[in-house]
Image 1: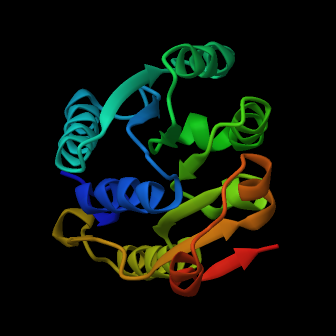
Image 2: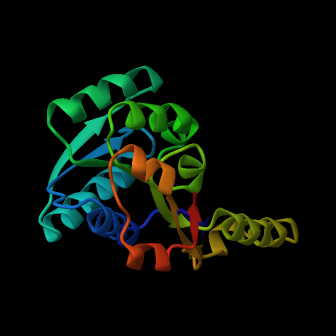
Length: 194
């Protein structure tokens, strides 16, 4: 059983899609960039179910676009464009996170608005991210490590969900894809990059 802090959760997927809909006028088709082997079969199935449920609830047509490895990312963007996605979302994956600069570049080249799970994508020029504040999550992880080093059994420690989340928006990226971010969204953003 998983122990310690986690950043996966169905409420995050729904909130990301909702925020994307708030920013992209007339959003109807969303592509989800997915690394199908990022996690175990059960976790991946839950992540897919979460985004399918959230898209259905919001009335969005969802296109799951797999990328098994870094070499598949460019063709994944070609598939998004071919299917006329209005925007895309990157699902959590260490491999996709490691390719964040390339993903942001492909999004810009294709003028495709993107929602990311981590601010590093936005710092690299992506449109927006909503996710756990990683500094806070890392501090909490250090508490777990401390407990284990002092003799606690990992199996006795509970799973903890993040308590601090951040919305980061890149205005330059919004202009590059032809979007004007609503003032109400900018007011709730934790950080706006000019």
